Length: 193
Image (cartoon, rainbow, N blue to C red; front, side, top):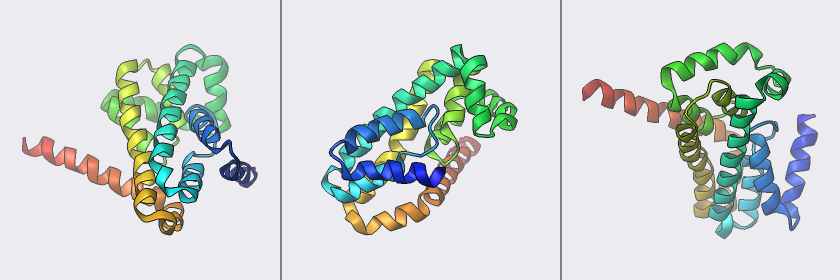
């Protein structure tokens, strides 16, 4: 099913509707859809490297707005819709873990989930269910999702099609390393200040 969905997403890169498909994919992935928008962002960017930063912006806006939908699903429709989405992805057992992350790290949990390969939809829905401050949620989402997509767009803009294979192969590893370095930097600052 995932491969079929992946092929379906990728076919949009060769159509005149690729930009709209990117926005819709980024929107849907943030609240319920399984395919990350990075795959289409990379395909569109490689096809037109000069527009890759524009695609990163479109992807960021779609993802942030979709995250807001996920928040509303968790906030108002957790019992009816939110639980079904969480169960569909087999993430029900992580619900209490997410609750603990929010109580300990608040916006950092959203920011890390928004940047890394963690299932962002789980964090958007649970942010609403646990009634995380909406403004904090939107700001953390905006920073993390934009950073993720603009790094991809920026690398494509700078290196063109040559970077595409590298990104597809190592994007998750890159985001994890960057996140560890970022969090580690903040921990060191907190320890020494």
